[in-house]
View (cartoon, helix red, strand yellow):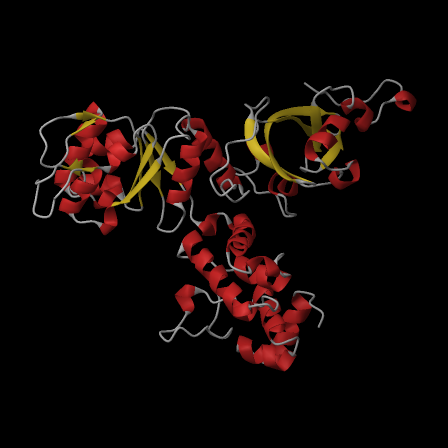
Length: 438
């Protein structure tokens, strides 16, 4: 453990930079105020940053990639660190993008107060998804989610993905599949919310010729189609009780029987289920089998809503722009657009953000993408018109709202005040408060 004490001969006392160079592995030191004091050459290479880039950097910027205050207890790795913490898997910002590192944090006490020593070790890159990307985001909740997924992926455990509608449960299931030993096998998806009871059974288990009217041939089910791979059962909370019993039997025996058939067929498919419902409440009310719930929730993974990981909004927005036709023309996002996007709470989560950016790219065309092209779905009127900023996003008289109004009106203060629904004098007070020059 590093100890920072006064040297008996102050004239010969080595500098922190000299001290950390004695450590062969990548190593950095933070002070008690969570400001980076020193980094050795191995750390500079590991992070692809210069010593000048790192010196004085705060913990939030080091771990999250953007300046800002400490995340505080429960979120900041330095606050959570004990005397010698277990390795923490995080993504660290670097000059060539973000890379995944294993960080071991040690807390020590010196004559000048508390210090933190961070030992950095690169991890092997996780498998990429078919579109060449991993899960998008670098917030603390997102990094913890990736760590959980990467830990359970190599096992055979059944995984239950929990979270609000639109948080990206299918995307997480895809990432889990491609981090597992079944990545070369198929990923098969079934959405229980779109199918009736009879159709669900036929889709999951298949059917024999003549099993029912119109069954003019044998059809294999999705369990068989997922052989050697992963079956993702979305909205499992919508399954009727009769089907819940049949699903439980398959999970316990790894065998299925086609509709209209008599033979049992062995299946080898890893099941990942997902729901936005509160299954524990459904169990208490008799709407979901308790034994199936415990079987599915062998390893529950909660996906946080977008409002709880706002650091990911801009990365996701730019990701969706790259996927849109011509969207790359609008990268990187301007500050007014970015401020407006971050100020919103996204009741529709990531799905809503994707729709917002797709629409914005279409409206912007070949011109610049402006705040007026951002239409939040929960605020669009019945006729599909974008709301004015007066009726618009939350916190209109926040700094983001004022900047957005000015950007939308070309810096015309009277027009911006009208959009905001305030007087020009009130707008001037906000300009002074936020130190905005026009």
